[in-house]
Length: 78
View 1 (cartoon, rainbow, N blue to C red):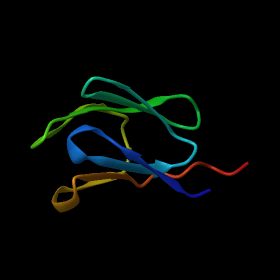
View 2: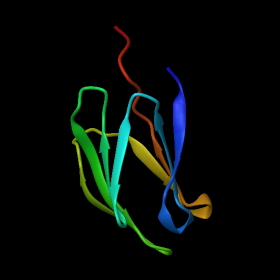
View 3: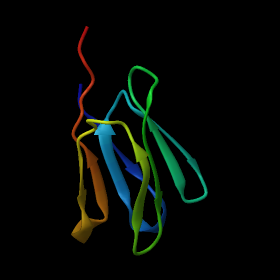
View 4: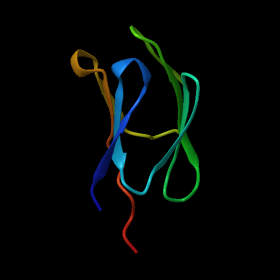
């Protein structure tokens, strides 16, 4: 299905499947998957990423040098 890049505050970037939705309030972010489940709740500052909660089994990686969060999950094709 492909991915989409989302610019976050403080120079951070989130890369996730196009079917995922991102919602924000100040430095707080919620990521919702293709089944409308909240899969990740996190905050960012200039020097920190804090994962408040994540669904069990969610695969993601953080690339500190580029301030990038990459979600490795992809939507299931029907």
